[in-house]
Length: 117
Length: 109
Image 1 (cartoon, rainbow over the protein chains, first blue to last red):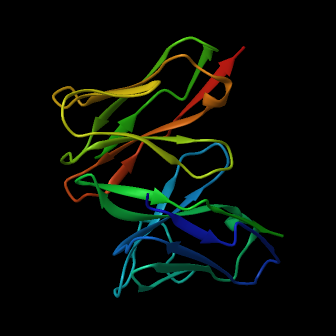
Image 2 (image 1 turned 90 degrees about the horizontal axis):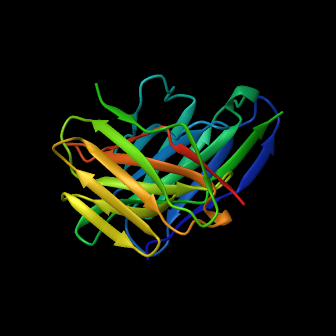
């Protein structure tokens, strides 16, 4: 089946630093990847849609200059949280879209837990 | 606007059956997904429905009625490991996934 990896699985950083999270589709090519954020006891919140070779589409309320997304290849998308602050502490999950069994399905990475001190 | 409703929390007993409902109002419809998410982990795929009717997969079944904008996930022979959040998500006319807030299922011995 389609496998998506995410690295790192967890990170602790100081306020004001930048953190990069990688999302890779291991056994398929993903023209579209998605970045989600999930706060404790809340549902997934879509942050942005990343299309290979073009600029990401950000959801309303998500600062594109703070959450930099790069989708340079069909198997890799990165999310960089710039000048991170404690309120950015969250569970960040990426997913990649693939067509399986004739329908579009999203395969999720294992997530990255970010803690900003 | 687009909206997906599902109960916030449900409780059931080990070995029993539970049905988690999901109603949706979206701009277009290209399929409905159910995902399972354990605390601290990413969601995992459970089922996909695009045509009306019941899809059975082991202990889990999912039902869809497009005319009613309604789906349910049926879990049989509940096990303690089934304690998780269950997310309903609908693909709209642009093939974007619209997510419900999730139903937290608590299984008691």
